[in-house]
Length: 263
Image (cartoon, rainbow, N blue to C red; front, side, top):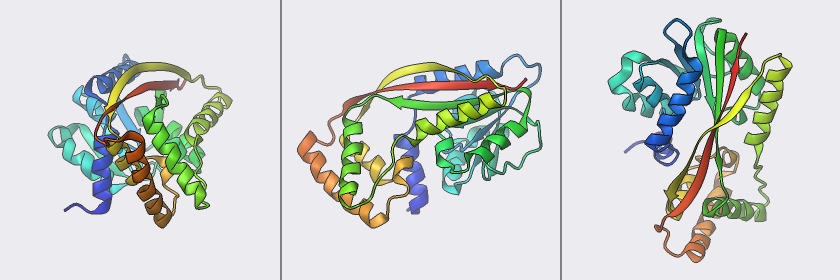
């Protein structure tokens, strides 16, 4: 049986993955951003996780440096990338101290990363340090329309508040704004566009599992006992609210890409 960190990594891989056609659209957009530079591009992803962004790019032939601080995430990714290992270099390292020389990669990819780092400025400085002149910083994020999954998350937050545990939401969006402002202060010109919109199906049971396994950043700081009690009450609430926990509901999502090219 896998240990708890590896179990969580597999849950993340299953519940946070992109549908193949969506992953392909994201890879195409990123590939266009690094095309036409006259040499074989090298891509570095910070916080690569289990490879949901990386694998479609690796499959297209890009040389890839996959960095993550979580060995369980890298372990799952390595197993998935076994057939294309010659194109991948794995780095168990901190995005705030990238073990690469200056001006060594053509693109740095950061998807859902900045809000996980209190001192994100160090990671941003490191990302810009390792980029070649003319290289590009690619930041990506999802936007989820409100719906049953959001209602579950909000109810979880309310149950914790009843125990005196306050959960901060919205940090991801604020952090993206802060990073954008920092890039503009450096004289750079970040450009954002929507890459793809899609609909998935999710069951209440899957949404509960994602919360239970703490797959979202806003769950990380909650004390374990409070989280366990809230999940027990949330499960009972979900059964009353939704009835069949295995009946799927639609989830509307969009993926955005912000590109910032060095001069």
